[in-house]
Image 1 (cartoon, rainbow, N blue to C red):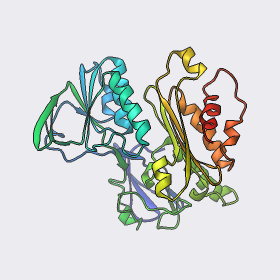
Image 2 (cartoon, one colour; image 1 turned 90 degrees about the horizontal axis):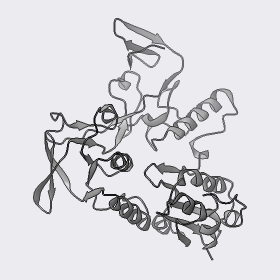
Image 3 (cartoon, rainbow, N blue to C red; image 1 turned 90 degrees about the vertical axis):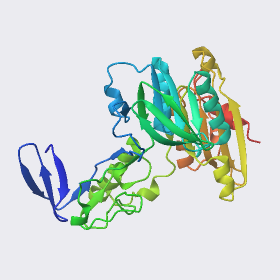
Length: 347
């Protein structure tokens, strides 16, 4: 292991700049696994402000900010908003889109927003941040400049593949229009003998998809060479707010746009286990292909939904229809038995 900054000299050689020396390492196989970095938007005054942090730097704060302003209402922004609200900070989230978590089902998104606002989190949607003056964030709304002042400002507008400084051009490795290392379904780059895995090749930025990337490469090098990105199937994800929000597959709108005839089910988060916890906020929704009965997707907003969503993925990967969960036997009282109730609503 060499601790330093690596870059390509050519398609076989990596140069590593360390604290006291520079070395070159030659390899027949090279794997690019440099992850992602925070997107820093070109906002006037952002880099000059002493109050601006990214999602990593803010974790080094020694004192709780009385008021936290978050630029970006995506999943990272929401997790930090909920966390700091729980710590006791006043939280304001500024988001450019007029829709709250625009890619999610509208009914679910509205419920999440309602619950978070009830906690005291404020959302300012559909505005453009114009400037940051130290701890004052100025934004444009309806043609007017307004502002909000905080003790800290978190920039959470997204993350991008970390390729800066790799000198990929020296090896001839191609990059996509969105700045990710270009790969095929086996995670090969455009150059033989060089692979890319994890966040750096674009797509979903999750630890578990990066883990699955390693399976693809391991299978090619030491297995039957059959497992590729095409075999991954639908990937679930969880946003760790309270209660958790989890999703897999398509929303109702997605399915209709793709030409499916659908059946949907929707229930409130109020099963016996939730009542025992005293946490009955939330909403569950599932989308099923009306012709085949196969599950197309599900959105779960309730405590521990991150555990339950994985059961739905197993059924989708096994190509079972929704009755497999509707008629499943689950221990009681547990969160998993919400699946009985959710899929029983589909007629």
